[in-house]
Length: 289
Image (cartoon, rainbow, N blue to C red; front, top):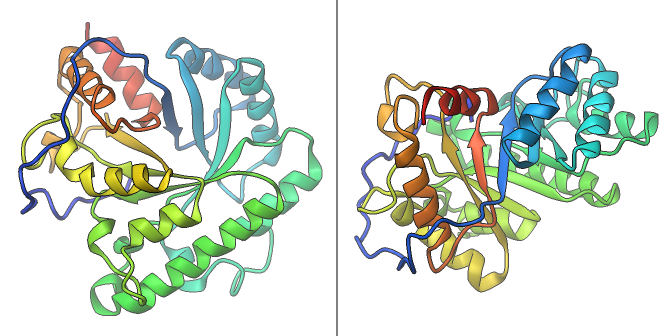
């Protein structure tokens, strides 16, 4: 998501939007993303902050070369606060070497999961993957091969998560329903069939309009609802100077509440809202009223 660059800001979609029932305040299942793990002495403070913001789940990015004891401590403290922890993995370069093929050691993300689980009883609540194959130069020159490798690696994550009895969640760009795999199936549909939950990086600050949140998520929302898949939406809070219209950085809390209420009161609400990322969301909440 850090590297997420929207190339389709102006969609040529029909303006038919999902109906909204009301704009009354709603209960929101809140998830968030943390891209780095705090130092050991700061973990209790961070968990308290997450709890104060009513986060039910945190996607905690794993640095596979880092200290695994920190992740055990974080999981333990988060669970005591009633917060789920999904270990988040993601580097586009893993697609080209497909994880285990060229890195058969503990730095391999798949091996890291197995080693971690062998060492501790503090199990995460799931596995999260954000690979972003479109960040690779080969996406422009050999997209079919990149997609095939991407699918093989996600399938490997699926196999590991299944073997460990851990749910699998995937982050996808909102436009993957326009990208077919070798069989002709849209990548977003393939991913929803593979994973237990998909989160669309649906970075928008308005609900309505041809380029609003409702329009860009409609295709996947309809598929998820008709096939009983869990689909959540991510909102952006980090500063994005090149695309300020898709982030809540510098915007008002009123605008955020309006979007969230409209989204959750729609005919096909997401399973959760993912606030990306937590530090940026904290800054937003502290600077707005």
